[in-house]
Length: 256
Image 1: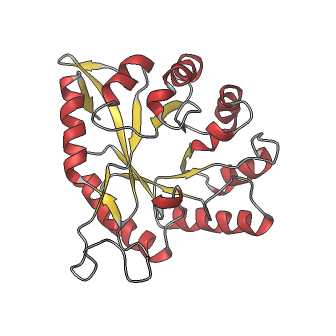
Image 2: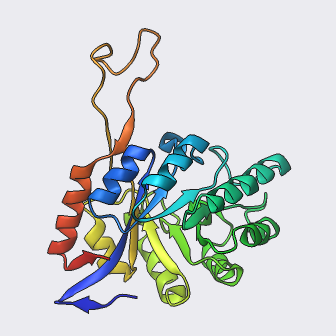
């Protein structure tokens, strides 16, 4: 819950980390919490076993693991559902604090049968429902259902491509459900717009990757190989986290 200490409002800063290096940067530079994933280029997927095993040994902050078997829509086959269940069991066995998940039916409604099954398998884990909420048939009504299903956090851009464009809906979600579930804004948030989003929605948490392209190996100065394959990779940028935290401080916010 928001409170003031020496005139500063306290919020959570969640960094979406796409690798072990990104996770470690996020921990070192002031994130409250980390969402660990891979393949940000397609919206994120579940990290590999090796990544999860090492992350469980290296983490110093709360880490929630993305449970998503592929990119694309949020309607899953029986085999994909079984894969996700096994991933949740693995994440739980490795000692992570929570998971990030979402699932819809073909008509855009929540896949409540699957989500109830996940809740049972994830017993003891914290639950974030990701931006599948923005793709659902009735995001506002469905956040109420997530509360009933046991989720403690929902990630949303307010049904717009970027959170800065979805302020009206994010504020409505916060007003309607903010006492029951953590409404966390995500989507295009950076040091230039974070304070505005917080001030205009009264939310308590923001989510971003703070990513940049890593330096290229000398052999591929153009960022592509001779076949046209992209050689660039993304990772969390400590400078972007620091710049964001500085701007938040100027706006009267501190990180919990």
